[in-house]
Image (cartoon, rainbow, N blue to C red; front, side, top):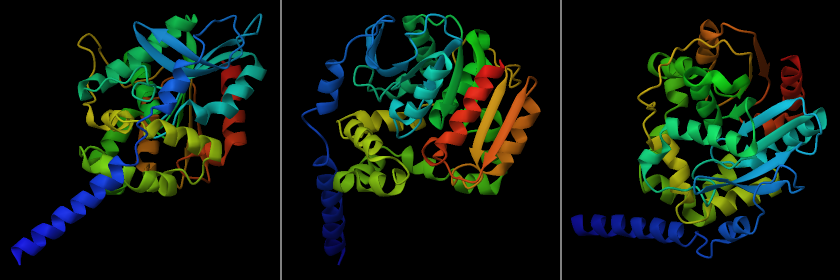
Length: 327
């Protein structure tokens, strides 16, 4: 009987291994397409570019660099498992409103900035990427907008390195101190965040997500996204190493640089937009974050879920542009 159980287990493992490994794009089509993009030039006309920073290359979407007198500068940070494509409606609106904007595929998502070690994905490194990109495109100070893990990076910069930020907009994820407290103290948030245990499990998470041509991602995570967005996201994730790099954001410790002294209080103007039906975020953290807001603070609750830019793009874009214009 034991040998039969062992055979069944081995069979299941082999099925998942084959179903996952055969889903990857060994031709690296996305890497090839990215390598063919022009490098950033502030006087260029390309809207999809490579931003080169100390040997790393970030694939990025830009808008508004043709403005002779821009109102301000804006950087947009995507989350898991998306790319800068999620920000297309805001890039267009912000450019039309007079802002120079950059949305870049962050560390692990850009083929030219995909280190293998988990330690490379600590939040201090992810935050430094934002500042390095800002330097590369000539942004002295800038507005910052983030969603999901992009919000996690944004909250890090807001609390640890806010000197160059003019304002902060977070979609879906509340202040990281409040969110951490909610995971510790609120049973509902612990339940909502339990998926992170899977994401942090090496190999198992990769096999589950990649199995059958990334069926789980296609059916469970990308239902609210456009076909063009789904195509881009899956093209990125299908490259060997990309899915692991994206999951390494969850696996790396939330550690800071040794010289970073962090107060949870936020003096910057903050806009927070969240969906009350978000399966990953509960109201406990949303309410708890208000104690840290010492500057102008606006909170908008929408009747939607986690994918705010996909389900309510007009409402979210209008609110963000109003927020930028108010600074």
